[in-house]
Length: 461
Image (cartoon, rainbow, N blue to C red; front, side):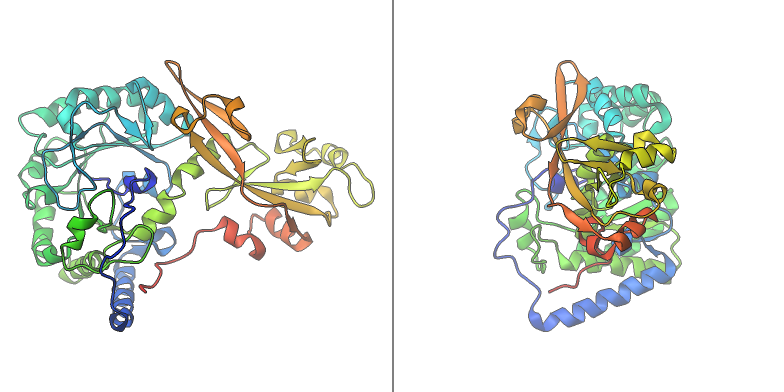
């Protein structure tokens, strides 16, 4: 499958048959953890550990990777057809005429997808498959629809194995404008760089994006100078993971797997970090970015919820780092019996940043307004809500079909999705110290588990 395999995690295609995979022997765990820590320290000295330590990289990230890390990215799978035969592919790519889909939603027209991108506020758009270059007309139509609707507000890239970019086909795509980057899976053709070199001459930016295959480490070391020579802008390395139906193929290799719900190949992660350390020692200046399972789980696992929450959050609400929608509640009257709404109005507080909720018997107030109250209330609470993007396939035909607050996402042509706001916490009391922290834009310790993503990579076990 051309690039972007990690998107399948959030499409729910992680393998259900991940038992019996070889794990890291207990006697080797400490050494593996120590080796990874040493490699990460080496990379940090010469590069960066961004996204709360989950993404090691050397040099600048591609603009597309930046948008991915900001959870500002959507990937459209234009087809399920590919002429490669990568052993790590999540499933058979031999279906022609499959409906285009993104984030598990089928889009009936290119304009419907462009409307979706606009409504959800995405600033990064990629096209994958299979290989989208094998359905060139559809690819051109989708790129054109996105660009016409959003102009230069989005960064657009495609994934390909390169076999269908020759014979003027890539030039046909680029002639229409709208594509900012082309990413090549050169592992599909034994690391051949001919198509990549041709693309460098015509594409605005060319990236090589491949899994870190442990047995190919020495070949990859030798390849780095060649990637620099031909003008590749970035090298993106992915961790091999058990996705779709690839578990048996991965298990046929001498790999050790994590015990996570989506098992990942430990040797693949170490391979990527070894390659980055080698690049530093060899003076290679090619930017190299590692996308591991931890990064994908934390950023992609919460990405669509985060984007849905951002799309529907009102001025009185806050979207947390964890992708939740937080609401801060104050009682309608203070302990002294004063009307809190009158106090806010008298203080000139922005009326858009607070609202009354008759059903819950309180006010939802943005934390920035707490300073307008003088003495902070003793009785306040917060609630957390998960924002789910759902459609007809989920049984959500309209707002009346769900027992929760729902916001429509109109895609035109009679197609509609809904952001459904689902409470996931009880009413969590917050004291005055916590209110002061919230007022200052900080997260009180008692709420950290709800609001923040963990730091760093978890130890192998």
